[in-house]
Length: 110
Image 1: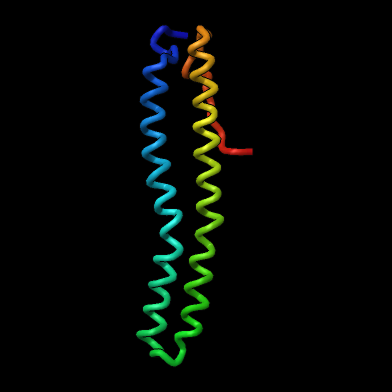
Image 2: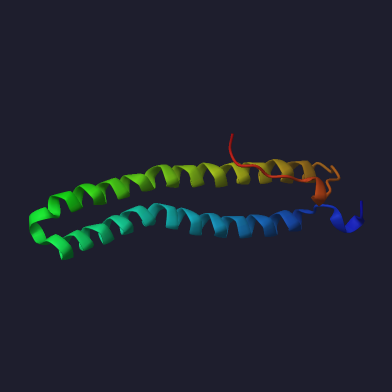
């Protein structure tokens, strides 16, 4: 193992910034993709069939919006797990433990 492979607090801070940015983007997309897709389906139904079949469009739009909930929950739990692992790693580094970057692994929630 090389000295340059040792994890420092500055490294963890940089990883935390990148992970937070990625989490915000992912959660935004996961939360909005379903409702936006539902509105698109609603617009297509309206354009193809007019207001007579709009009730079907509302149902399909609702289903798409509801599908966003488990996606958002999955990614929220994923990033919460990663942040908790970063917290644990930071605590170990603060306590003086020598940790090599090549030995660090992150996993999603279990």
